[in-house]
Amino acid sequence: MRSLVLGLKRLCLGFWHGMHDPEFQAIIFLLAMAVLGGSIFYHWVEGWSWLDSAYFSVVALTTVGDATLGPTSGLSKIFTMGFSLVGIGLVLAFLSRLGSYRDLEGRD
Image (cartoon, rainbow, N blue to C red; front, side, top):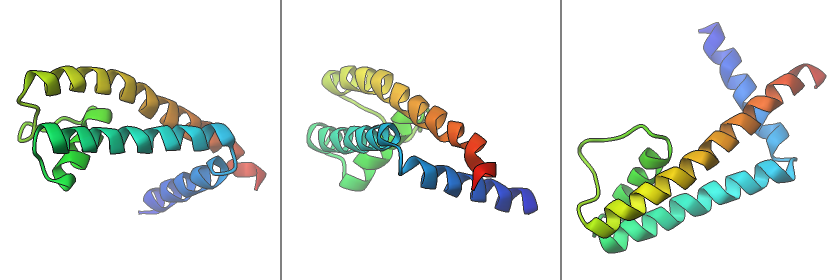
């Protein structure tokens, strides 16, 4: 339990430091735009609910995968391939940047 609390503390401190970094803010903004853009695309092309569209966007970007929900049209499959390739890079940049703030924890 102690390690969970310590991990959550480090995560919160990382976000705190990140919110003062313009590059981190830009990455968060781009991730939010990617999820929003994916949600709009899947809502209109696949006809999914907004929640399902947002859920699939996040699942695709984080490479989690979900066998119960997936694109059915050729256009959606092509979009998902590009969306995932670009979005996974954004998620990795986000995690990398967030991890870099771990070194700053002792400086507070």
